[in-house]
Amino acid sequence: MTDSNRLDMNSWLSSIVESSEDPIFSKTLEGTIQSWNMAATLMFGYTAEEIIGKNISVITPDELEAEETSIIEQIKRGARILHYETFRLKKDGTKLAVVLSISPIRDKFTRIVGASVIARDQLIQVESEKKKAMLAAIIDSSVDAIISKTLNGIITSWNHGAETILGYTEKDAIGQHITMLIPEDRKQEEEEIISRIRRGERVEHFETIRKRKDGTLIHASITVSPIVLNGKIIGASKILRDISDRIEYKSQLQEQTKKLEELNQSKDQFIGIASHELKTPLTSIKAYLQLLERTVTDSKHKLYVSKTLLFVGKLEELVSDLLDVSKIQAGRLQLNIRECSIREIVENAVESVQHTTSTHQIMITGNGEDNRIKADQNRVEQVIINFLTNAIKYSPLSDRVEVSYWRDELNVLVKVRDFGIGIPEENTEKIFQRFYRVESTSPHISGLGIGLFISCQIIKRHQGEIWVKSVPGKGSEFYFSLPLK
Ligand code: ADP
Image 1 (cartoon, helix red, strand yellow):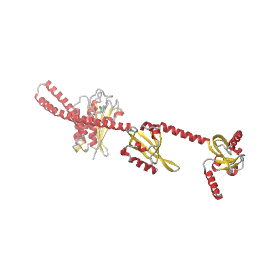
Image 2 (image 1 turned 180 degrees about the vertical axis):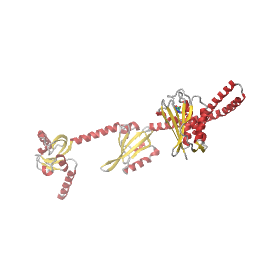
Image 3 (image 1 turned 120 degrees about the vertical axis):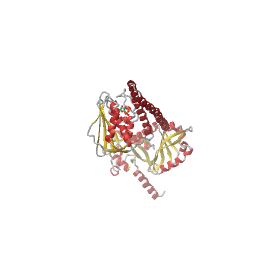
Image 4 (image 1 turned 60 degrees about the vertical axis):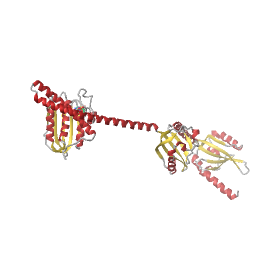
């Protein structure tokens, strides 16, 4: 090696030392400091100019002088001292826990003339070891499989979760190619994943199928991230979660939902058929009873027939409500829209309900201003009749029901007010649902729970609104509004 080469070599070496992140300094066997890099300045606070030529005792605590002598003795014998935990002093006098690696320096005759020292901050060292241990513990205790691989697909780490989920032990897996986990028909997935990783992208929650050691398949959700070292992508880490249970649960749920829907459909069909079949004989019974009513002369018999006709009428109402429900369910509720008067609708409804009750007086209150709307008159009457019969049914201790109607800028509004049992707040939305009844407040009052459902559907089909205000124990106010135009 020529002198100029040696010079180059020297400056090359000293630039490495200078740029090292670890503090590096050297000293003679007598303890005189000979070199001092930038990282040493940062750790101890002395610049190179300040400290070169001074004795090492400047940074050695008094009580550790003897330790320094023993180190020098070992160096003189040519020994290297690795990972020596001790304390040194900073320029400001504070003590610093350090880990030292000390090696002998030889001259060209291989005589030992000094020592080089690499120092590390013990705290940082301990912290980083702690961090490493913690990470290792987290990885190992994870129930997910955590696997790392090179960019060529060779497995480089394999945690406990991976053993449990995939069946291979760490020993089996490390060094193998990742494709051993991929079923034949999905092999191209690995290409796609790796090409995304090479571009520095993450693959998140990718749901796929993977193969266990015993050949069985599992549903897996996979997240793959690039492993970057000094700015270069050197591999990929992969978290794999076994979602077989979730997938199975989902498909069970779908199956159950399908079954429920089918059951629900057959129930709707049954209601439709049954109410239709009931309607025909009922109409005949009614017709014969009306004939009988005209022919019997005995007053007692006349009374029996008219009572029977009343109950047949109720039965007819129930059957026709059930028919309406199945029409609504099938989307076949037809409206016969015509221009009509709101006053007439209200008066007709009041009249037809009033003569069925001997306990309640139905009163039309307010100024009763008439307005014309476009609606299915019979269906809107049906809504008011339902409000009125409920108002009577659910106010057994009262004798009065009030009806009023008015208009605002855009709508005609109708209100039916009773002084009955009322409805708890938490039920006021639900009473418009099919078959919903508030059993807790009226266990002895019978009903099918469909009247308000039908009313709600009728009003909504008219682009109107329906709602209720109620105070339990005081009474209820049922409202609907219909657009004027
Ligand atoms: P039904 O009266 O046949 O049960 P509805 O659909 O007409 O069915 O009413 C649903 C439920 O709403 C009733 O069961 C009852 O609990 C409650 N409800 C309706 N109207 C009133 C009212 N005016 N006062 C108190 N509760 C009422």
